[in-house]
Amino acid sequence: MNLLDSIAKTLRLCVILSVAIAVIGLMAGYTGSPYGEGLTWLAVLILILSPFAGVVAATISLAYGKDRKWAAFGVLLIIVSLIGMAVALIQ
Amino acid sequence: MKTVIAFIVDPLLLLGLVILGIVAGILGALLGVGGGIIFIPVLTIVYGLTPVSAAALSLVGIIAISSWGSAIYLNKGVPNIRIGLMLEIGGVTGAIIGAMVAVYLEDWILMAVFSVVMIFSAYRMIRNGGSENIPENGDGEFEYNDLKCGETVCYDVEHKTGGTIGSMFAGMISSLTGVGGGVIKVPIMNIYMKMPIKAAAATSSYSLGITAFSGAVVYLIHGSVPLGMAAFLIIGSVIGAEAGTRISARIDASSLKKYFSLLLMASAVLMLLHAGGYV
Image (cartoon, helix red, strand yellow):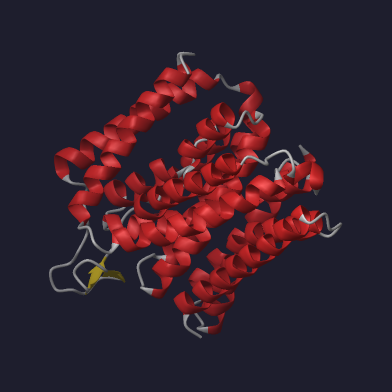
C-alpha cells in the first residue's frame, strides 16, 4: 500500500464526490426540490471530513507498512483531532 | 434550501465567489497558506457576512484548497506526510489551547507578537533565502520531487520536537486571531527545520486542512455555514488549487521564497493595522 497514493486517492475521491453532490444540490435547490438543502449540506460535510479521512488513510497505510513510529503519530493526531472537535462542540 | 440559496441571486455575486475561490486557491496551493487572509475580508466587507459565517465559509474554502492541492502534490511526491502528521499534533493541540484561553488574552498583544515574528521570518527569507539541509552525498532521511527541475531531492529535517512546539504556537495564534497557520508553519519548516521551501509549502498546504477540520465540523453542525455560497466557493477553490499546483511546477524555489516573503510582509502590516484598530 503506497502511502502518498492512498492519501491522494482518499482526498481526491472526497473532493470529487463533494463537488458532484454540491452541483446536484444547487440544481435541485434552484428548481425548488426539497432535497436541495440536504444534498448541499452533505456535500459540505464530505468535503470537511476529507482531511480527517486523509489522516486515517495515512495512519492505516503507515501501520500496514509496519512504520510503527509514524503510525503512532497518526493515531495520536486522530485522537487530538477528535478531542479538538469535542472541545469546540462543548464551547 | 430556498432561504439559503435564494439570498444570492445576483449572478455577479455568484461569479465573484468562484473568482474569490480561484484567487485564494492559487495563493494557497502555491505558497502553502490557507487563503483565510483573502476569504475573511472579502466575505465580511463585500458580501456583508457576519464574522461567524465568514469564518465558517473561510474554513470550508481552506479545506477545499488543502484537499485538492494536496491530492495533486501527493501524486507528485512533494509533501512530507510524516512530518506533516507530527507537526499537526502540535498544531491541533495549540488550536484547542487557543480556543480555551482566548477570553483571557488581549488580542492586540498576540497580533503584535505575530506581526513581529512574520517580519523577522520575511527578513530571514529575503536575506538568507531560507535554509535547507540537503546532504551533499544525496543520502537524506526524506525526499521530494522538485517539479521545476524534475529531480528527486533528498533532505534531512532538523529540530523535529522544536518544530512541533512551534506548530503548537502557530495553531494557538491561528485559533486566537482567525488567521491561518500557514504563514507561521512554512517559515518554521523552512528556516528552523531546514526543509526545502517547496516541500515545506506542500506539507503546510496538506496540514492546514487537518487544522481546519474540527472547527469546520462544529460550524456545519451549528448551521453557521451558508450552504449555497459554500458550494460556489468550493468549486472556485478547487479550480484555484489546481492552477496553483501547476504554477508551482513552473517556478523555482528562490522565486517562491520571494513571493512568500512578500506575503509575510503584507500579512504583518495587515495584522498590525488590525491590532491598532485601523481595519
